[in-house]
Length: 243
Image (cartoon, rainbow, N blue to C red):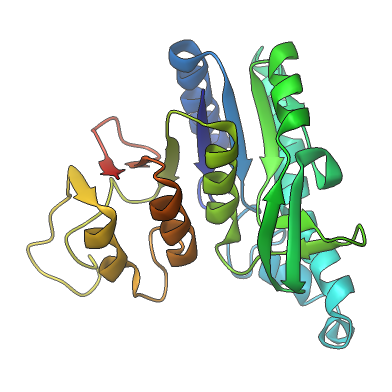
């Protein structure tokens, strides 16, 4: 089985999600079981983005627990929409969220860490349907409260699940064709890298919007999980990051 991660840009509208569904279908045909991790729809000022949800009231600055609960809704909405559209496309699936996903967190609201993963319910669900959708960016703390795991945390969710489920690899679908030799916005003669090590990858993630969250990449290196970064709209090969 594999884990596929779709970010906010990939989930932004129905046309983009149809492309995501095509990738999920291809993953099911090749690997039988696919766990899909999604981010909230869009970015910045988009209506259902995390930033927009957190701007609903200034009181979220006072209650970090309530702020995390609101922030987590972006991924829940994205999961529900993708699930319905997969069903419409004839692909059976199941959404697991909250305690069902088995992701336990600790630390501070807004920047929690994954302390443990119990993949039992995900594994059981994969026996019933080949496609399981997990909202990224969140888990449950010891008191049963929703806790988010920092900006870009859906990347960490996907990699942590890949490790817990012993996936073949984790696929990331991006608005770039793969890992580039330097930032395309600032560099010249930028080329796509076909293969790269984790140690070569890490310096490339020191940007404002890294292609993968650096904390997630460090987790993948520690757990020796292969990653495959590819373009959401491109059929060309992406970049493999292997231990």
